[in-house]
Image: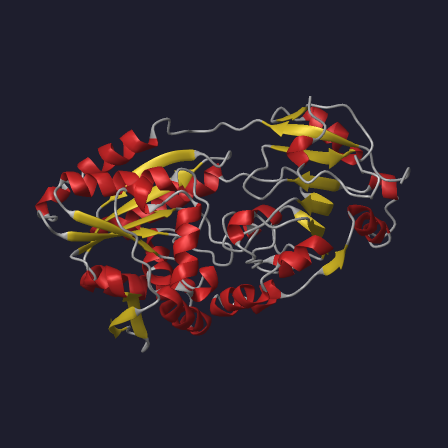
Length: 426
């Protein structure tokens, strides 16, 4: 392996905004809505909890619970995650609890069901579904992270509006909404369904979270229902500004340590890997332009859901063995992204993947391959890259070389360490 590229570790310098006390900020934000005017003593309040690995999500949800309890309301949490968890109530409860949102921690019940109530017919002619337990509650509080969507582009992408249809619509709603999106557009369907939900389902507030480049909470904002659309547009602009990125335009080989639904709805964020519109190449002015991706592992929290694996060309064979084909296919079919469930070429070792890559990148000599190695698409503050980027890194003020050039750290079996964060430390 002497002809493979030498590598070094890089740290990105971000101008990051951070919320230092999430619990206090949740309380302050909810207080400004004066919910006592709507939530009366004894009123039941359903609070949505999604399937993403959102920073401090357990703290935020508990903060909502405690605020409702202080108003003498009766809160409970509902898993709001479309078809995730294998499309079962038990699977969805396990995901919520896996993020630390146990009944003991939250101080309230978790009510998980896949049953939905049909609220009405949308203007486009399909039924609007809503979580049965949330429908039966006196009020609903919607909580979600605002961020760019991995498949759809517009002034509304992933956030409170999407949570009201895909999350709280459960599997029944997610299936029909994704079909409708294929005939119309994401923007039209999200607005159409959200209008009906806001009119008819007792939504009393939203709690929006925005994260910074380090996957930490940057901003917490409580939003009145009538302001969901206008405020979400503003917060999406901020979220895009705070998105982490791979700081190079061209990458021939991207190795990613882990993927999962806790990382992104598509397993790996298409906004970070430059594949929002095409599974296997950048389009238009997307960057980075990545030729080949190799996936090295699944997160424990994804429970075998490998949605998005089909966007990688290669993977370690251990990944293929960890995939729960049933729940992965359910999720991808429901989401209308069938190719995301397809299987890449798998190899037992990283060395074997490198061998195929060197044969497949054209006339580039093996030692000159433009190689980047990240932990996951949320964590790119530090990463490893090949010597071909050295001059560029040294010339940029936002990038810092934090290790010497070294050979790729293969073990005797031909594998790299499980996590890039464990190697080449300064």
